[in-house]
Length: 580
Image (cartoon, rainbow, N blue to C red):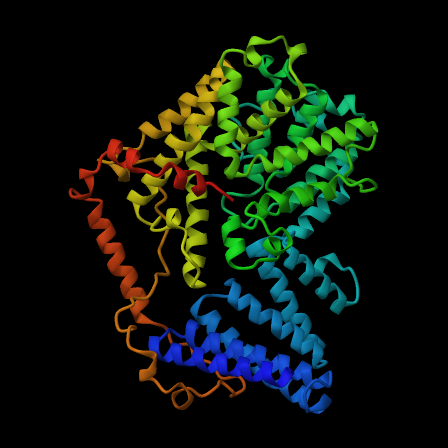
């Protein structure tokens, strides 16, 4: 019954309070979490009263909503002080404050909190995340119009670009400007869009499928807008670079002869959209946090399925981004299915299989021993999967300055995810730990180069010798890592700081029975109360770890040289380290 459910929830919250006292938890884990949980229970009880499931009626429900609002405000203040405004817990509290203020008829405050929530969701998860889109719709409903000026900066930029879609043209970019040395971090926004249009035109697919210039521009602009600008790695610069790599490869004589227009178009669309709306964390994190993406696609590759879902929406018949409008029914079916295979091929869980198939095709009886006209459709699709997968992992094959940028950015994104795992008391991803330490960065990068990138690009270079220099670039990046002089390594990220660490378990092993939770813990009921106290133990632990880590990079730490470090690396962990 509702009464029993509410009683069980309150008893559970009392037990949580006892654990908080036992652990002497910092404010974020203590006052903040307890206030939030109590707020949720009070909110649910108020809903039950309004709907007649428990006594209280509308008046009792309103009192509960007022009380819950105070509790969420308390949690928001505590978490803002402890974690910052853009922490997921703080954003959850803002969500509830927006909801409750709307229910209480305080529409100005509801708009203020919902707008704050939307802007933070765009910053943390991007404009195309399901929860961000839901929040955007709620804000529009509160505003009573579709005023785009009330939306986030990224939405406004995309809206402006779409409004001026006629000004984009492939003729504005010379194909000779798109080379291995083109720096994705230095390109202008308009040029980045028009250069992708040039890629489509140069491969011949624009003319072959009679793709309207404005439709192609809309597709590219919308895809670009779907990438989260605040992601350090999985952003538009990465997507553009992957598309560029794929384009140059399929334009090379050695590869082009094996592919037809259908494969080329599928590969360009797949690389363009392969990480669209990527939230900056991997699938494992989404599963651990029961993110809406993981709930919608309850599989280990939920991120790839999410990217695919958004891509299919862009190509849906009747949309203004459907570049397949003039394809025959047979070609459309083939291209859509191949795009599906190619985006799913970016899943690191398929890495070993893809490498093995590339090795097979480069051996006796492989595709290089056959005439292009004799290649089966299945072999073409496997080749396309290999090239798209390699393009996705091409960052370290590019010129040194670009490779270093990509290397630092992926390390920062891993580090950020690990920090969130610690903050949210989640199981930690081992390969993301301690990346604020130079030695850990070097080991992670060397493991990726030796066990992931090198075998893949070695297989590619055997199939197509014109790309051997890319494999050599990867080996050069590995040789640049000198464990006798890690501080001189060009790809070292010196700006990573460990802000969060697990609290020591010392003093936490006392029997729970030593505490009488019913007498020592009082439910948080005071409206608006908060605590901004912080834990010195966490910062002390950070400092101690940093000191030990620095000394560990000295003479003692250098006993481990490249060979022992690389051979001891678990290749399975290395593969999963680049997983989404």
